[in-house]
Image (cartoon, rainbow, N blue to C red):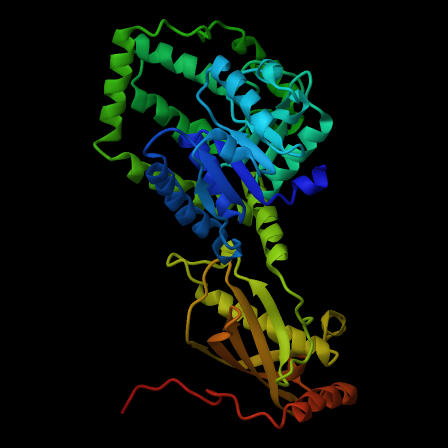
Length: 499
């Protein structure tokens, strides 16, 4: 299987169905890929179903109807059945080197010749893990972060015998399901992200061990401070900004001496029974009796909302989500008529778009101002068709909307496909009467209509003037072409209280 084929896998085998394995299953299934999972836990089906339900809720909020039809999930009776016809295998076994080496060799023996194995290990070296395999070149580390179905980062690290093709295939697979691939240049225990996390974790243990701060206070120090910046700028870019106009060099000269002071204790304290009990008690107090699933949903909602905010800025993980949304939308597109073309029913197609995250309100519907925006954009398509595009406006003339009436008849949610279909009802030397219908999805459910009256103006003088003859003729041609259509339902409506 080439790296190009790797981006079009049909089935994934997952070995190990704990928190990470179930998270992988959810990400693959909800991106339209079939999964076969093996775990000897008798509760594996119930636990996996709970994780997938949470993931479905979160990813539906994140990507809406841009998500493809779900893949299937089956529960294999043994390891061999899980990987036998898989194009890609994700191993998520417990972090025991001896167990992974033995079972990876078994997967290698049972999987198809073209398959690749990605190991979810958070720190074991791939050179050791592939040591029992007959085809060690087919193993690569693919280390994710919890929750796997929402956090995009995956670290890829090859061992001494991992082929470049295997790394490329793994990268293509992970990219296909909306992840950000971070290539680890050299094998190192803990890779990149976990080494950074471990440094913070070790210092946090000292702060608790020495009675300086509680678990809750340490989390507050992160989530109300640096953690907010880390989510979109990391460490080095944050410090670069702290250096002002002179950047990182100035920052290091200014703060470098203090960084050499022995503030931290990077070798962790001994994890005694007493320290374990202290941390566990403080963690229970911090949780405040709220159960696991409730916290998982809260975590997922916060991650989705943060991703939407970053997506609106096309930055950090929001940039990854935006790119994946575009990939999902392109994959789901069928051949569609071009914007500005005349449909079989005689109306002009003026808008065709999925609903974007920045258009969603607190009810998770298309927000009110976006109806006006989309209808306004649709009117611009009509104006372009009669010769009143951007160049015409720049030359000093335009059409001004002088009256608008919008009816809200239904709802559109994130990812729903919407179209605006437009009719030019009437036109004369100075006026243009336009009627739009907005429809949702393949069923073309009408969710809104807009009626506009526009007047042709000399923009500099701010007064109405006749449109050029060629423009009048183009507008009248649209009216004539649509004259046989029945009057639009709702045209001429007005708002009035019942008598």
